Image (cartoon, rainbow, N blue to C red; front, side, top):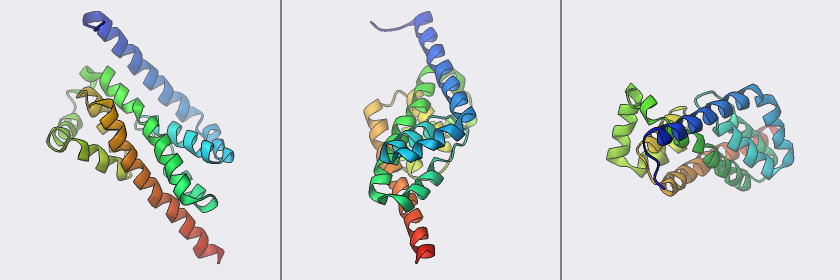
Length: 180
């Protein structure tokens, strides 16, 4: 069944409201979310997922990844954190999918949309790799443009795991530098 008219707008509104509520809850309880690190790799996965599920509001997931890279195997830390971050970034994609009319008239939407239409998957990959809040915007644009979800997730995952590798090995290197 294809949603159209008021039903489509209702679903979009509900998804957008859920994403906003999730962002608020994660921001309010960010101190408790950080305690997940005590659970090892699953904790790293979930903390990274939750910290990337927020829209625009900063929750320091990459700093946590650096710290965990100093404690655990950096390769596994990067894989757990990058995979969690990718799943967390679904919030931006869903916000764009559901709230297309909300973001279409914004300056940044036009710029990122232009990049996405010109460079496609590479835009998602690069913005996922570079630590910046713009990736939330890219996720929203990808959702609004109806980029296939599997492509969005794949490019996000490659970029996020690559970024987390740098932070995890950075944390491990700092520990070796001061631990020796």
